[in-house]
Structures are given as structure tokens and as C-alpha cells.
Image (tube, rainbow, N blue to C red; front, side, top):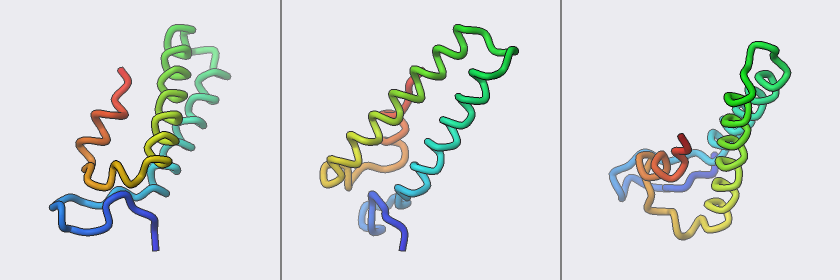
Length: 85
């Protein structure tokens, strides 16, 4: 069974799958590496992506460590926390 941040429909929200978030962070990191190695990318875009990727990963680590405090957060709430642009 997948690890979730919200484990029931009690809050009227869809569960947030931690493995899905980890997987998406991995994809973001891979995209970042691809962009960095691409000659088409401007240094501004590359720096922005690096900064955003790092911030997302750090925020996720912090949220994961404080999971009991975020059990009532829904996807919209997490989106607001993770929004970095």
C-alpha cells in the first residue's frame, strides 16, 4: 500500500501519494540535468530551474519530516506551498 499524506476521505480530499511526489521530484531533477547539459538553455532558465528544483526538494523533505502537521492539507494547499515561480 502506498504511503499517503491524507489517509481517508474524512477531509473530502484526494490522498497525496508520497511516492508519486518523490517520483515527480526525480523527473524534475532529470529534466534539470537535461537542461543543464543542453546548449539550447539560457543560463537564466537553467539557474531558475536549479533554484526551483532545490527549493521543491527541500520543502518536500521538511514536509515529510513534519508529516503529522500536514495530514489535513489537500492537493491545493500543497500546490501553494510548492509554488516557486
